[in-house]
Every structure is written in structure tokens, then in C-alpha cells.
Image (cartoon, rainbow, N blue to C red; front, top):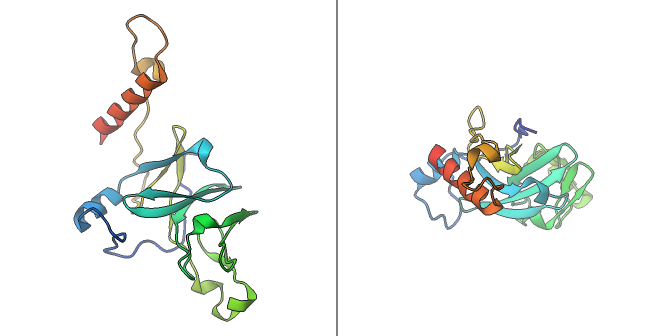
Length: 182
């Protein structure tokens, strides 16, 4: 899946900074416009887990339509959504059982919260792109994912003795290439 899984839910508010952010506002905003890998694709399961990007806690999980990445914060009581579970094509909050679709929109509110309605609860979602075996996201996305291309492994790393390159050598080469491209 190379196209971003485009969320419709709430973006981060203008001037947003994560709590206890280690970056200046200007630096965080500039970095948040870049694409970063946040997990290996094969490690993303139908069980939400927490990852952190630029000091912001994210929940990453797999739904039938692909990988989803959203802020790890239920809009109702602030519980981490990574403590929740997946049922069918919905993320279910562990606290009161609010159900969210891949777009971050609340689909169902339990009866005890029914007076508020589903329109009161939306998640901050981020685009998810699967590329190079990694799940990538951007906290302040632009038009197109700016994810570096990866050269075929055998072309990227030449061994003097003709032997196949080691995984360590391939990884070091890719890190060097990615940093050079930034």
C-alpha cells in the first residue's frame, strides 16, 4: 500500500506542541512536516500499541483496510487508545467502549454516554503509508508523502569479495542514504 491512508478527522490545532516537548515550537513544526517511519509493517497487528514521534504519543494498529495511526488519546477521558482493542473495522476504547472508524470518527457511543452523541468524539488521525517494509507517517502532512526511495540492496552495497552484503551493512547504508536525502 503506497498511497496514504487518508484520515478525515481532526488535525492538530495551529501552534500545537506535545506536552514536555524537547523542541522549540518552530523546530517541532518544521520536523512535524516531514515523514518518519514509526514501525515495521510486519510488527503492526490488530492490537493497538503506542509509538512516539517527536514527543507525541501515537497509537498504531491494523484494520482490515490497512494500517491506522492516530493520537494515543481518547477524546472522552484521555485514556491511551493503545490500551484498547480492535473489533472488526473499529478501534474500541478500553475505558467506556467508544468505537472509532479508520477515519477517526466515532461510530458508536455506549448508552451511558448517549446524550453526547458520536459527533462529539473524533480522533486526531495521521496518514499512514506502507513503504520499504515500514509504516510511515507525518504529523502535519502536505500534499504528497516525501518518503525517500530505496535502492535495490545489491546495487546499494558493493562487497569487495563478491559475497552478499550483511544485514548490518545494508541497514547502515540505508540510514546513511536516508540522512543524505534529508
